[in-house]
Amino acid sequence: MINPKDLLDFLKERRSIRTYKDTPIPDEEIEMILEAGRSSPSASNIQPWEFIVIKNKEIISRLASIAPYGRFISQAPVIIAIVGKIDENPQWYIQDTTLVSMHMMLMAWALGIGTCWVGSIDREKAKTILGVAGYDFLLTVLPMGYIRGEIPRPTPRKDMDKIKRIIK
Image (cartoon, rainbow, N blue to C red; front, top):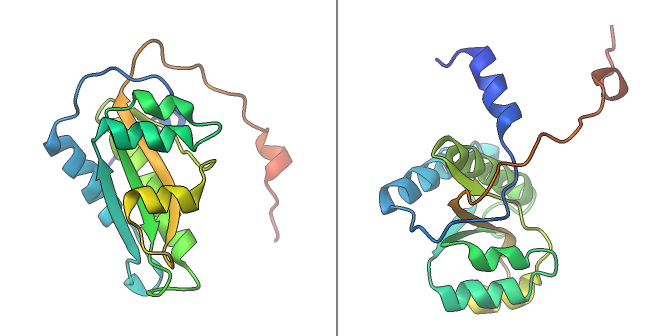
């Protein structure tokens, strides 16, 4: 087991990264990130997801062009698209795939790879570009790359007293 304090420190240090080096990410590290996603919990263990690994710069550029607040993804050497299989779990696919994305982001961080949640993308156009079935849900595209420049400073968090409520 990991030391709880070490885990909390690790979780607090993770940052969203929007600048990436051109350095390719080794397939072994991509597989570790995918394995972290695959090990995520899901409702009734249905695992209603698909992962699409994108290394093609033309496809990455096309995805960046339809992400109004995510143009930075064009710099990423790899993008992982996370797709929810609606027909497999129509009630919980969003929650399940969100857990997947966090597992992947944490594994990437542990490997020294930066990533950032990209939710602002034209999902229907992206699904067409990626060949995702019309009835499936594209949750996010996660750009990934080794961090270029400085790691952003921590952003302020709300005081615990403002967000915590205890019912006795």
